[in-house]
Length: 138
Image (cartoon, rainbow, N blue to C red; front, side, top):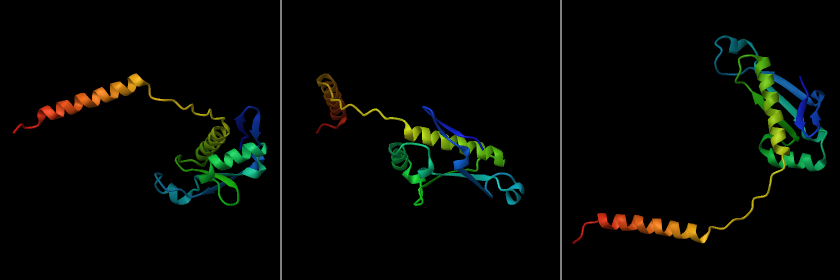
């Protein structure tokens, strides 16, 4: 297994990662019944070499993937080989951690301009007039 590079000098050593294999479903014929190709990579969030603030950010953004023991889990079973699934799971784990640690820029509140509001109302008025002309007059 390889180390995970999270950018900005942060590296998760391979010794903190735990890989488990199991049988996976999907294509593969009889091979599916014999070979354990599904790979699950786990890492303990507390053991990550990051600041407490970064760990808390990971916990909040990846809450759906972290179990009650504070272990982040990623599974891959799309490839037909164990090595392919392991590489794919490692890439996904790296991507998830990088994205969780990325600083988000706060959204700036904006207002609808007066001209945009007038255009919208004029468009609604034209549409209503068009509909009204289609009705039968009695």
